[in-house]
Image (cartoon, rainbow, N blue to C red; front, side):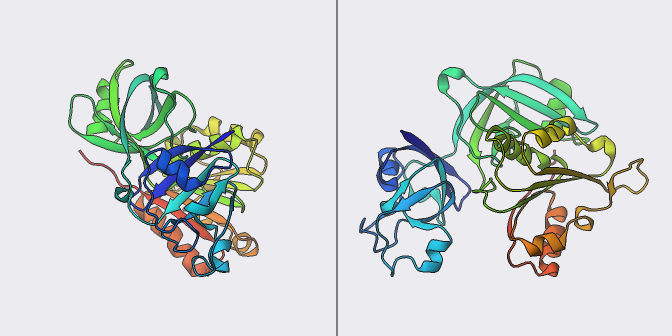
Length: 340
């Protein structure tokens, strides 16, 4: 039996390797060309320490001077003593440049579908060469797409779960912009798009607490991948609330796809929020912070994931701080309009 393991680093890069049953994590990394820093290999020096953010594992020996009881409770681990028991993800608080095998890598995808899914949003689907195998990434990460015929690249979160030979991206159509103009005016099935991936440290961690997902605009893309993975696994064992904020009802996209998750993820709730006061809308209005449940977040420790424009992310951060919710773990990704 082998397990797939992701190594994420402070510079936003992610590397992957396969770990054999009962193999030490450090040995598997070195076998794959990922030279994690190390020294003693005896569980004493803590040079190879990281943190498990998803999956199950055991450790052979950890010296008290290397990791404290509090460290262990936070799922910190020593690579030289760790044996994974499932697919897993580990985070290391240093740049991937300390390892020889650094990502991201360059791939090519062929446009297989392009569709306008709201007034200002398109979905672009890329087909990968099946002979090259599936692309490894974590739900929530992103790719940097190169616009055909230009030297310009733009970054977009994966809008589907990993594991297949097709990638989806939600792309906001600005009045003017390199990617917006290409998708709106020139993108055709059969176009070849080079891209770098995987990138980013915003991804779904091991789920052991209720989840509050907050999406602004095309920040929804990252959560579509997360939800698709949860659905494939039959749920995550915790309640999941998705808040999706846009300006008008016409800006909502992929609503049918989101609503279908209610039948696939036990405890899933979808709350779209419209900010424009004059819009014809019978649902939630205003801003997402107007509808977050401080009492629920204070009663049960929860994880909050936020992806969207910087003002929205900052408003959520400020609201959480004002509510004094120390048990909430916050993960966020900001993005801004790419411009021309």
